[in-house]
Image (cartoon, rainbow, N blue to C red):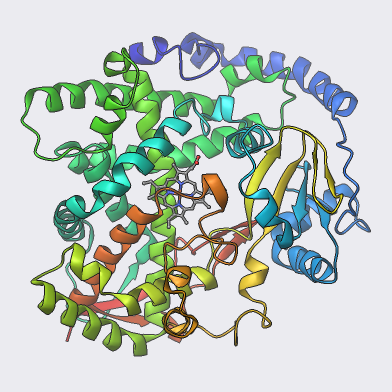
Length: 512
Ligand code: HEM
């Protein structure tokens, strides 16, 4: 409780914990007053941006359009994609919370992808859509984190592989049950136990990476921040500075952040006094910060949880999809193992040189991402200055744009038999097109939009690639896989985001 009371800088104000508990009764009175006013202000001040583009599903009223986006987004976007293919430059969609966003024809991506942040802003778009000032989803640490991932983490990857391998082994040993004969497991839960520990080895180092509470906190912060975002978003911006103090979701978030700060004080002492062999994100973020950061534990905590938010659920979802796909396509297990064992024999174990030889695994991973992208759209940006594109298309300041991505992955004019799961699709493209760099798991180009695009394309993809390859390698050597009922668990599509079924089950047994 005391730590919470003294945590002023994560959010715009300080939550006074005494407003909770017995005094919660006040909330009822406050809400009775605030709700009608908030609604009135919403109606009066919601500004319609002047975008000249048709609204998808305009035959429905707003409530039904919101529902359609939330529960039938794929069908909605398919309709938009067909219209874009026929030449439509852009269209508007009503999102789950009733706000409007613009979906641009993919052809504009080349022109837009390198525009500076003062025209098209990534962080501001996330801030608007997640109420980032309150939910902390876009903290002031976001740019710092991206910079350090690019400048230090990626170049250091070859040196980090032995630590990654060790942590993957330790986490599998801890998180996976003892398995001999076919056993049903919930793979998403296992990945959400393994990935935070493995990531933490490189984000905060030993011994904190094995602290069960840190593992839980670095995983759950993301869920708590999104819950806070959902709770505050319906309130009018003028009321948010007042209302957020009363929201239970905010209280949970504050508590987690206070705890993260306490972890930072411990780790600073730990890393300050011990001779640490390996520099990790914690050290690099400190080295690249202005004076004062080393004792600013709130900033350090914010940087760590922001990093976890970008890294943990994304990687856990991608690896879960891959393991679901492996279970549903047992015929690809033997070729993957053969490639892996040959590479390990040539390189003397599982190391950086082994990973670069795993071309079949790379192709399989990319195909799994094509079949199960993390989102139906990409390149979410806030237009921060009026933009007129070369063909005269006008994007007014204030709108949020996106580009349709997932429909392209299922377009049979772009992919042969797109509905088929073809694990070696990208291997063939690598071999036959003469542009190997275009078809790798980490490739980011206007056809591979899994990592976003342009100056903000995911800088963590090289780390994610290494982490997932090491995990898959270890699991392939240890287990056989089979799908329950022969099919992989179905994805959940909620709005434009796609997730593996968290309760999805597959069979594992010790490798025969
Ligand atoms: C399979 C796992 C991952 C997926 C699918 C993924 C996907 C993405 C996407 C789509 C974006 C937005 C890019 C854009 O709009 O142009 C992004 C941004 C970002 N990702 Fe990842 N990511 C993954 C893993 C990671 C990891 C492991 C890290 C950190 C080590 C990371 C760090 C970041 C950061 C810092 C940004 C913001 C970049 C910026 O502000 O310029 N991501 N990621």
